Amino acid sequence: MEYHGRKMKNTAVLLLSTPMPLACKGVVAAISQFLIAHNGSVLHSDDHLDSGRDLFLSRLEWDLDGFDIPISDFEHHFKPVAERFLINYHLALTDYRPKIAILVSAYDHCLADLLYRNGTGELACDIVIIISNHPNAKPLADFHHVPFHLLTNPKDKRESEREMLELLGQDVDLIVLARYMQILGPDFVAQYLLRMINIHHSFLPAFIGAKPYHQAFERGVKLIGVTSHYVTSTLDEGPIIEQDVVRVSHRDTVEDMVGKGRDLEKVVLSRAVRWHLENRVLVYQNKTIVFV
Image 1 (cartoon, one colour):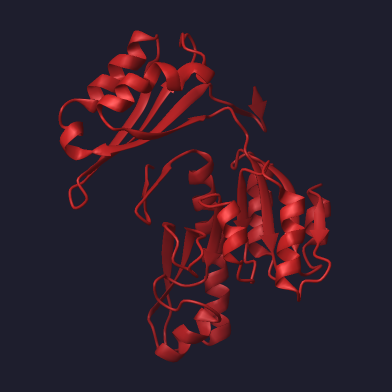
Image 2 (tube, rainbow, N blue to C red):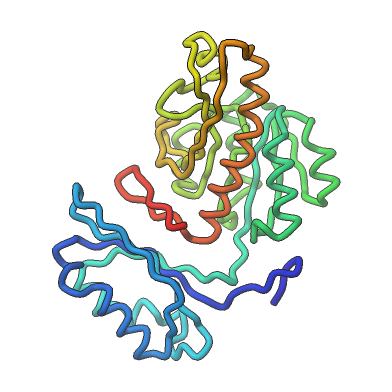
């Protein structure tokens, strides 16, 4: 199967964590032997030891061609290994195209970038809907043939969240906040925990909340940055996926900072979304390991 000239892989990915004392007793070998015993060919294996938390974390990808266990039965067959090493794991198939919804407000630069990257095949997903509290993004949505929904009463946050829940349901795999400038309530966030990625226009934990570029200007910083993170009920404190910075000087106005920051926002958000789609992000204890 191909999308935009890119052949879809027929592989599976295992993201896992286990207590480090057990990992030292051969968890990598046990998993590899399990896969090989069922005709699975290991393509990539990437490991990390968090000595401060006594955790072993890993991403393992293997070829499904010839693998003799149906994926629907994987949990049953893998259970003895998982129980022996106290493995917490997430299994994903790389040929699955996640369904994505994008929330956006007045600024559409991140949305435009995501739509372009999806159109070229860089982001292997299906963007099923764009929801906004402003009409600005509709021409972009129409151009890319993605359904667009303008919230009925955007000033009523509670009603807007109910409206979005009805539109999104539970079929959406990921929600991307592409500069959606509204704080989402805890009940809404709980419905999509670790399935919602935000771009915040500062290098967190600095300048949390509104107008971070203005805060940075007043502070006289020499670097400004942006942060892409999973959304939690605590504002701008979810697990961080990606960050980057750009240099500024005393000659830069707030408007200059905003311009430089927007270029960075697009890149950082697209990286975070792509790594999530490729099952490269392992979340633990409000942190992430990104296997790239």
